[in-house]
Length: 112
Image (tube, rainbow, N blue to C red):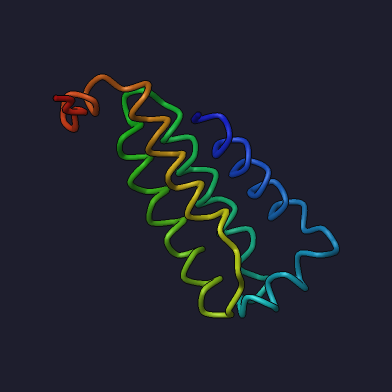
């Protein structure tokens, strides 16, 4: 479950580093200057790596929640019907829940 958001975030960061032809148009649509692309790519990459390291995975999930929340707010602000970003956040936490016993102990499923 964690692989899907990680791969998508890594591809997204890579696209920001590559500065492809559609990047400037996409950033303009969202109201962001393209000069911020590399910085956002670095932030995205660092948060993803922190999430991948078992000792720091909870911190990484928190950081990715903030990053993805900002992305969601950006899309909502320009009236984009873009639902992949909140779904990625759910997959980040779902994947962490499945692989981290500490989180399962903190938030156990109660069945009666």
